[in-house]
Image (cartoon, rainbow, N blue to C red; front, side):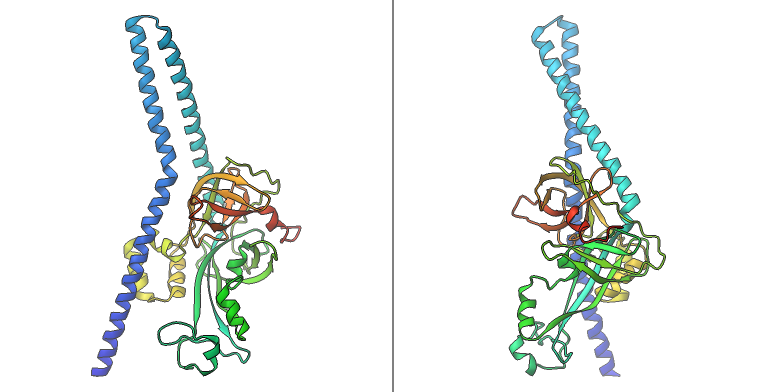
Length: 370
């Protein structure tokens, strides 16, 4: 009895530490989410203040005109201020139109943007998995044959974003999401030692769908960071996102990105603290079980941020909407609600700008009917 009680105490203590660590991650994700919202709203607030100041200055000039009579210099200043006010009001109107367009895109197509949750491990030719050493590091390939077989299987967990593009269940995402070992030095080193990667779990969670969908890789690009996955929709009503086939993206154009930046942490950060506590305490540290619990409660929803296109090249669309790791594979919408690109990279040293691949490259991977 004493041994059983001690084991239970250690397990409870370990779980408490793990829950505490997850809560810290949730708090950090919440702070980041608030920062994203603040940056998105900053321009609108600035325009509101500018409009108020201009209106006040024009009103002051009008009062001076009425009390002091005609003043040519005052007339010129008032006309300039009125022009500036008109420009500011136009900016506010454009921002409001972008906000309305963003709300429409979220309502119509947010349900078609999925959270990709996956894990993979490495196996030798005999089917034996690579296992962790006691300190948690994978055993070097040279030592793999003689390692302790009782150690846990070395498993890599990650999250990404994808979106549905046809009723046959095809999903567009990045190749580095569909094949996380692609262009990975560690995976290349293990492959040279005879270890090949294999998925343990590879699933898509759509908003408003309680159960996950098993993913399979249908096609990948050999030149671009793009891939097509496929799921069996089983008659589920998941929105299909419309693709812009005109290729009309231009610098300065408003855009919106939708996805799951920071993965699980951002989803937990958006949920009520009581719900988060219950899920973490009942499901434990398993990211798979936590994700399933969030899905059952309808808490998996993509994060959306708005911004503008900074540059357009043959292979890239550069944009300033806030995003971060985990958003890879997310759709970039224009104000008409069409997908113009697929997000694939964030360069923090490049002014925080993000990069996306024009949708024309993704269309090349799809059947003509998609």
